Length: 256
Length: 256
DNA sequence: AACGTATTTTAGTACGTACTAACTTTTCTG
DNA sequence: CAGAAAAGTTAGTACGTACTAAAATACGTT
Ligand SMILES: [Mn+2]
Ligand SMILES: [Mn+2]
Ligand SMILES: [Mn+2]
Ligand SMILES: [Mn+2]
Image 1 (spheres, chains in turn yellow, green, cyan, red):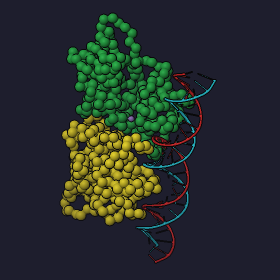
Image 2 (cartoon, each protein chain N blue to C red):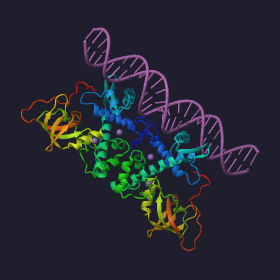
Image 3 (tube, each protein chain N blue to C red):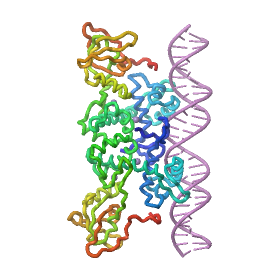
């Protein structure tokens, strides 16, 4: 019940520190950026949230004081157990809201992310659980992202991207980024949605377009778009080869 | 779409000043406190919002700068046209959300106010209109409060309270305050809900309990509770008498 | 009209959150 | 490994929103 508003105090703070919406978004960003053993970089958090890196430094110190993250100066940030729990519940709220808006209120799948980005901070646990129950406790959102359980369990498998599938390989679309409505419409126009099965027909050199068969129909997809689509169960057609996955690498921070 | 968050700037401000949730709540409070020609007092706004009067003074100056209220120093505040428009749209959002939560998600009517108080600031116009459409564009919320239209029209009639009905008078329950869940449960337990028809059987002196017939059953109601129930179409049984209504008085601010 | 009380405003402070500019540390590269 | 580039932090500022304490104004009562 009742998530806190920002500037003021309004409600006496009880045990739980009553995080602001911004703090919650930071935790979510960190959750999404850290992988395995690699901490989330300040710049990465900043660009994810559209905020100056200097501002992020400040907030991370606050979150550290609250016991929600561990920060090693100049070396990145990772969630503590309790920070992770907060992030997962926020993600649960986000994804259930998206699912509800699509299934019950007729929203387009490319139109729910921003709405959920705000509602996730205002919706009570009771509301979320009622929505979830009404939907039959879904396990994935409209973009294929897994929904954490109330207990904070979630499928954390990482899949390879469609962009890195080899020619001849077949796979099932698992999920895609939902942060860009244009991308989602681009993909929808090509039949790329969670559950679709794809097969790479050919690829052009120099990052040229990828030709794929999507549920029997032949389609062309830009590699930039394909990089935001994750697929599972890839199977090469003729001879199996190791694919350099964009999956669980952990050693270094990727540039961009 | 997208109501602003507080501390930061985050989105470039376009034409519309993008009010914070708090500012919106102030406007709503002023709307509900000013009646006819009487301005809303600073203390009244403060106690309504649970905020110190000094803080309210500050915010009112900001709202005045934004052209949303007129403030006459030491004399009270009233909404400008545009402030009123903001307040009415917020109230529309609030009441549609309450209605939706009750009708579509099985919330109890005494449990939706706080939820709506937060969601009203996060829900986009699109979401609200989809909810409204799904409900068949209701004209009143679960507590009998009229829902302003998209154009900002609303039934502003004021009714007398059940507490001021004379013995023998019959009336229909129009609405009740929704800000106290305990009150709502108290009323529900006695069958007092919008549309119920009541008749005052007797009243005790010194603000004692009021005995009423509610939809045929006899019930006892405390005057403090009855003061938060508004009724319409009152009709005295035998001889009609002027009732000193707690309705449209405007000259002085009531104490408390 | 004068006084005392209620109402309202100002002054000074705090905190969350953001920004830019300047500085520090780490990492990469030749 | 030295120097440059990238990444991250600190310093100083701003704004919205709250608070308490003190001062100003208005109002009801004698
Ligand atoms: Mn968010
Ligand atoms: Mn999603
Ligand atoms: Mn509100
Ligand atoms: Mn209501």
